[in-house]
Image 1: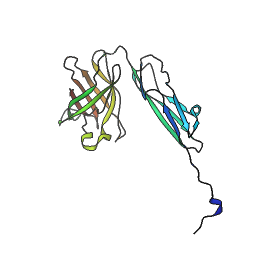
Image 2: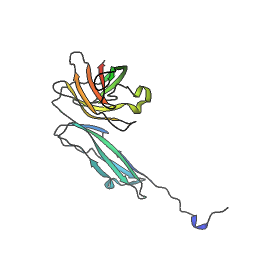
Image 3: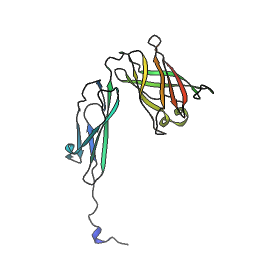
Length: 213
């Protein structure tokens, strides 16, 4: 078996566009403050193609939340690549409290009417990402993740309000591709440091979480 002559020299190397963000991959800005792009560079092999990068953003600097600035480019052979930066819009008037840390979490799951309680204990991590804005590695207190793995942790962002209530900004569970149906009665006890909230999920079941350090 032999190769045809016309198959000579048709192989080639393609370079995906490598987009490198300048500054941090996650930035925080105050409510009402304009987002200022820290910058980036994009290389296709040895060629700087930064001017060809398309930037899309859903940042609303007038609304507390967690947003994305996306950077994408297509190389000369039509292959695309992308990366993103997280932008947190926080309320500078929120309590200057850092809730970061590891919490022992007691979760009681019930039906929507409060019946059939199923308790479970675990721990969660909370990280401050901006004044009054925090990332939670599982809003269900690892109720599913303990058995199914980390892909089934309900990650999310919450905000601490001036009256020490807690509000949900966003939530997502990778394994099922959805988020919470509701987030109720979130509170922070400034005296004890205890956190409490009720995550509504799985057909309106209530996951009542009490979190203590």
